[in-house]
Length: 178
Image 1 (cartoon, rainbow, N blue to C red):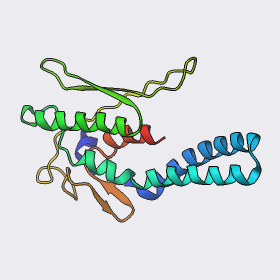
Image 2 (image 1 turned 30 degrees about the horizontal axis):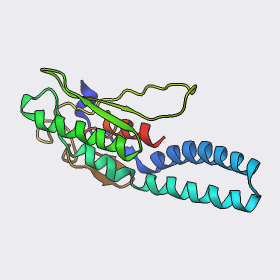
Image 3 (image 1 turned 90 degrees about the vertical axis):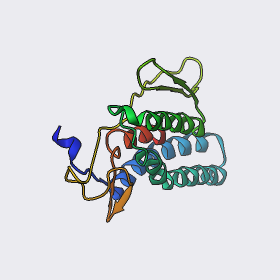
Image 4 (image 1 turned 45 degrees about the horizontal axis):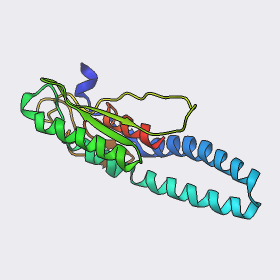
């Protein structure tokens, strides 16, 4: 469709604000509340600060992780890109593992690989399913109105550009961060 051919940018300021608000607010509030209930105030504040520093450090790495995915032209509709689709699936599995999860690749005869990842949360805890795709539609600067090369991740001003930043590689990574 039309949206598939247009360059889409994600404002880094909005991205940081949304992620920091959700993670910093929820995680920070939860951690601080829990720790302040069980530890002396100064100790709880120090631990909360260390945890949030780690979270913010991980968020600083988010654009580099998105870049790793965007720069793989994983166009499942083009048979000549099968190796790229395999590469992005392997990258997806490796990323889930890097976040502490388990990941398996399931190969479907004649189809694209499926990455199944899971994170243990404890017995009796609710299960949440997150579904994303890591393949993308074809894109070309020569035939479509891209201002940048589609498979080169770029930051222009306060926005990020590249095929998959918003559909669906960026959101897939956001699920891991948030």
